[in-house]
Length: 78
Image (cartoon, rainbow, N blue to C red; front, side):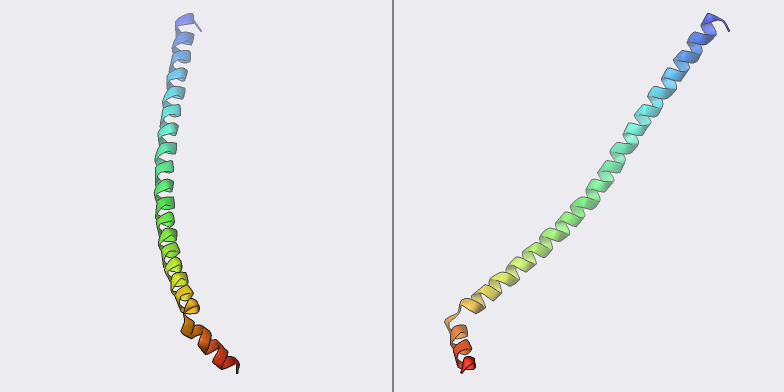
């Protein structure tokens, strides 16, 4: 094998490795974006559920702290 053929093989191998590396980076980047979209939708759903639960707790707090609720508890205790 002469020198020129060896140099050409090494250059082609380098180009192939560099191309594969860039394609792999692009694949990982697009995969990360799609996973981020899924996570964002899950986070939005959890935030919505959290808001609903906060509203329910506020309503329950209002009911329990009303003076008439305490009066009903005392009457029922008798």
